[in-house]
Length: 385
Image (cartoon, rainbow, N blue to C red; front, side):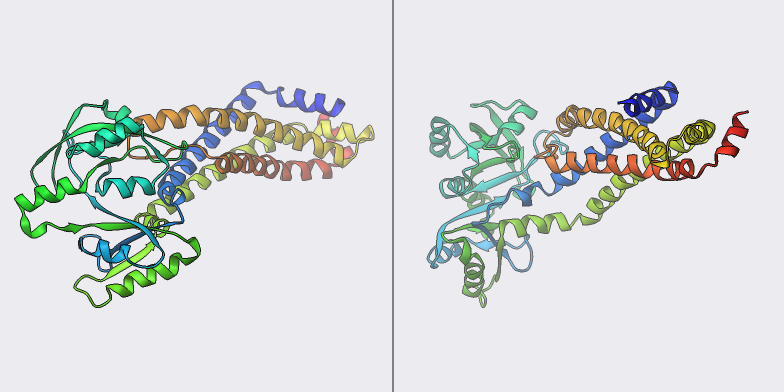
């Protein structure tokens, strides 16, 4: 109890120094948490992928379309539960900065493969009846103010021309980590329009999403699909949905690595600041440590004072930083709109924040505690006199 009182009094002895150190830790821990959350958001698509979903695309590039008749051949393979076509649309809403994912899909089988998209039954029926109907995610609807019944005009880029869609349904996520920033519409409507505007591009799809009946056969079924089209005009590459998503992340892997490095550099900088604070504190109190030694207190007690003060300062800054991470992350997600479909502070991020703070608190006290333990009583008392 006496040790705790001494630690508290020592921590508050230089209030301005302590306050500035706590503020520095707060900013560092907050910055670290946000940067780690950005990294998690980058991998959210891969982390949320279902193990029973495969994606079949051209083995050359995503830019090379697949013939739509591949769909029936894939569906006929043993172990395949369902198949749905999907096309990336890349339309522009009002102005280029308004980016959000847009997909033309085989509505019934595709949405059945994604039970995490929660759509009210009446809205789903309206969507299936309207060839120009669209389903939008809750986050997307909130960002742009879309409501059921609104007409959303898109200017085509891959598929030229002006396209009008009617919002017939808004889906919510089964969990907070479900991507609700997407825009879906009927592939049949896209194909019919393309057949009129550019017949040579009709009956082609970007990818097929395949659902397997047995998870243990996913690799086998992937090979069977690719073998089926190995000597065709357009050969395929089939992989798990997670591997497909990771392929996109790897294209920007250098950015992700840079963000990770910066997040730990921030912690290293605050460690240096904290170490300097504790060194100054210990240097000013050498006479006091010598007096305590003369009174019979051992090196362990002196080390406890220094480590306790360092950990107390680290704990104060860390707890404030962790507490602020959540509201700041929510604010940041709102500012980013649909750029990060999922932006949630994870439990692992909080654990990393706490672990880094503990390391900083302990490491900053190592040298001051060692010097205090080695201080000679005569020299310390001479300095006091």
